[in-house]
Image 1: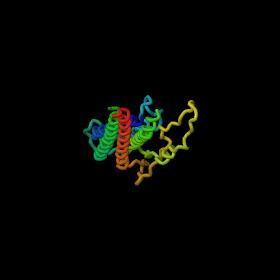
Image 2 (image 1 turned 90 degrees about the horizontal axis):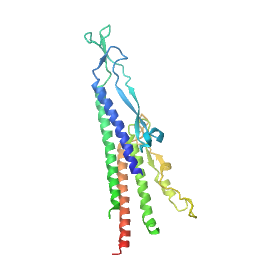
Image 3 (image 1 turned 30 degrees about the horizontal axis):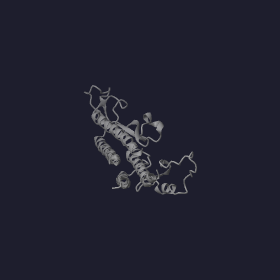
Length: 141
Length: 128
């Protein structure tokens, strides 16, 4: 039954958007993490969404075909900025520390976008639920 | 029973189609942020054509299996976006939301028709 599948599809989207919000929170929390080298420095994490198109991709053949999942997390490729801070315990021989490449403004915008997408899917589920209840009312005499 | 078949079959099949369309639209909304996802919709014309009397397999004997009309997956078409996006995603969220709202209203309309069909039969059976 197709109305049933809507719950799975919108649910998978809510899950994906929640992971996106979580990665935003993680990025914000680590925005002032400093490290001794470019490689060790914190890189902003971004989820990559992928459509679930076949049943093989879904867990236990749950009715979420057509939904969405996180295929991977990628690091932001922006180079980390370095500052001269010899007092920092993480500083290298030259006294430089590498800051995270998190851009707070970008993260805030991403968080708002994720929240709006989440709300959209909540509305989709609400509408489907109402219609399901109305269909059930057909059995009332 | 012939009376029930003829009274309900149209509304019943319409309800299934409306539900299917809502599923397709919810898929689009769920994938509004997926790069490369192409928005789909149901091709009503081809489904209408499939319901024409001569287009389906004839069942002349009791053992013949009737063609299933509940699956519209093959009648999906890709929608053409008003504005294309750089990541190849063709879902336009507000358009899909509007479509979803409209589809929900159409589903309710079909439900109302089905309800009135049922109350008509109920009235006939009661005879009062």
